[in-house]
Image (cartoon, rainbow, N blue to C red; front, side, top):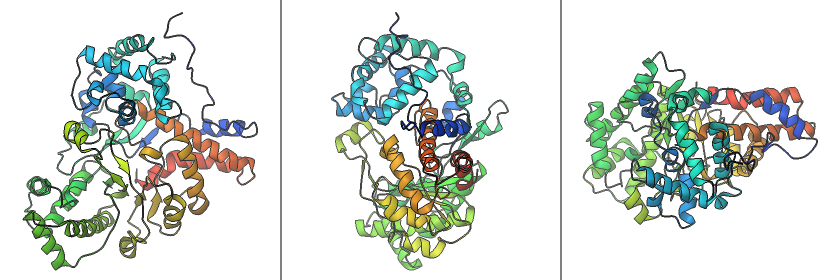
Length: 474
């Protein structure tokens, strides 16, 4: 028997559904309501240029392993050097790509119990028809099977995009990006679906960064505005946001270590900004300026309608030597404690009840689910609780989140699922996971006679389709 057809990891049709005999049939029926609905992905990191160029993927490693920091970080923790996995190296030679793939297969056991294993097994089986369990004996055969698939036209990026049923996919983009790739896709009558840019201005709010002066100078040059003053910075941001809106953007995404907001008067804002331009600002001044700027970002969202998403609480680049050698987003960002109630109060005092604001709050601190996020979303009409993100987008964490938030804020005050991925082939696996988990949660409410089954069927469709359309104005 071929190592690729040995029935060792065939996907169970009821995976992630409740095991209780009373619940599983209900969960099956609810899951069937959404199993084949289009994918709406309003926050992610796949490069739009991938779909413009539509070139064949080079090899299994560059498709499934290297771009996915979920995979590389756990392999690194298990003793595999990042350069052995191709991180930060650009295109790999065939022998290097195969060697990296062998590392994945040889360390397959370290992914037991993780969502990474669930996603990878789903990708191997549902995208490439491979059910053999990765391991030292199967590594080369799996690599060769995927490589052969990638030479076929049905495995090119656009074909996979269609096959996955993606209706909307958002990218994450710097404010100075010309968005040429998005324009090409929107003007191409042969491309089905929408690929939307997302305005991501983080670096331009962090005036304590060594590169900040160069960044805001480039921002001004792109916008045709003098950013030597705070007023110029505001005008440049407004103009670039309008550029993004004209290219289809529906949201502005913000990630800082905290979500503190506090207004400065005009003179203090200009004074601190001038000090930053002269590279003389101290850490306290940089924090005060950023908290004022973040409040200004909320004002802009009220004015232009871009949904504002906040996902704070990460110490990025935790390991300096790795950051220096391999760059950001290479697996060593570590969560921090979260806090929202007092930090966002100045924003809520100004805009929390404004009908134009959509504010989605994400966290990596589970203790805030029921203590802060759900109560905020349960009062402020502008607030939605973002789906479990990053380290929390695992089955058990998703269940805890759904239970903790729903008890206070209900189902409707949540964002819809967010896949937040750089790996194209993981998008359907992640969304399917969320649909199965919601089916299980709602099935329990039905079995406990807290919902009728017809209500649960309406609810699960709304979670998959209605929530993201409303929250992100799709």
